[in-house]
Length: 265
Image (cartoon, rainbow, N blue to C red; front, side, top):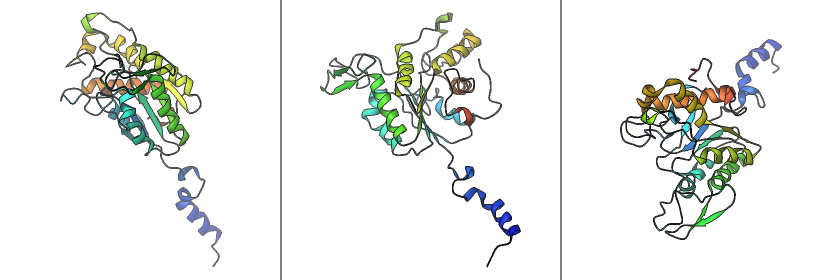
């Protein structure tokens, strides 16, 4: 039996989303987050602080899966198989945000190696763990290796610099950035196609400078690293704003931002 043109048009209107190759047939991308306690749900698990990752869903139009874990560095996240866990989930078109730095410092060559410290350097330098003799790589190596795995699966990667510690601690503003901010920027550049960079450190710094000493100190109820839920939400807003204004160039998250997001710096 032949369909009439009217029936065809009606069926098209109702079922266009299912047509192969149509724009509507493409799966909605998912944003995956890889990071430490400053990004993780409930942050440091102390009951008073929180990470910014889950707040990002308030400012984007797609699902966000927060795979950040407290106490992790690029090295330990790698060695625990957590980057691999994300690789097993991502599909073409998804986006992975990688943000580390707070736990990556220290010396891995000592007998008290904490299994988090990266080998010093910005390239393919290696060290030997002073505790178990295992090979330790640089921050850039771990981040780039993970990113390239996701890109090979058709995903996009956003390398994000770490959030700052309390820059108004003691009542005097300090914008000094730890070396891992520059390391993250370098990794994003060296990965090349499929990767972009967001200077989250700078975005939050801009926000903190604008808010002032009293308001920023109130965001740190426990220490100078972990923020309150309000502070975590503000860090997510600063991240979204950095993407909106293309602070470090265009990222694949930009078209996924909600309209009317707050301006915090």
